[in-house]
Length: 250
Image 1: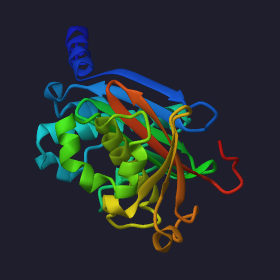
Image 2: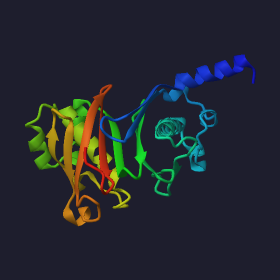
Image 3: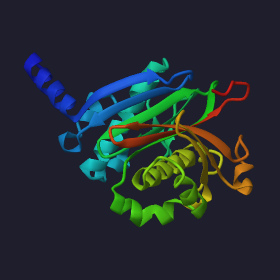
Image 4: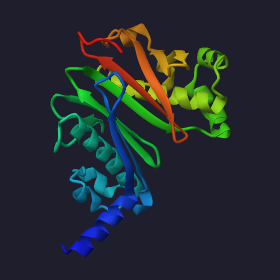
């Protein structure tokens, strides 16, 4: 490939994925990788260009789904490089969950235009869950809040500074992060009624979320989980982490 063709290919690729950043979260061994992507600039050749394996079953998926998958795996690729695990692929299980390289753990999420990944080594964390959600419109929040939030949650969030759109989006995201983190312990689909956000520290951007004891006894935390959150580009990002035994909680 001549230099002009290579430059053109690189330019097209950067129109698809851009604004990639990777950093360690404060006071943790967790790496966060974020990238922005534009689905209609996707091309199937970008899997090879980014050295990311494409599952065979993805070939029949629409380009939007392929673009989301590629952006998520690209974010994961950059996160793994940052924790000194380069040139490793994130596989996919029969349940379509990410399969992390030996000795690592992580979680991937995406919206229509932003992909994120968190990753760490298993010596530090045994489970991670992350989710990114665009803040819902008030109309959407009104339509889904009864599916997403319990009566106790609705009463509790009325005491917080979040408006209804923010509250419903936040709870949705927190529960998605939790389900990802605990899937290895409870490998089944859990609907939103299976967990409940019981506390939010708005000053420090932390929250607590619980699941019933009969489910929680199968997890290392007996069903009580601590998370953190942030707002980013009109999205909520939520994170659940479970420390390895002997690691200090931060």
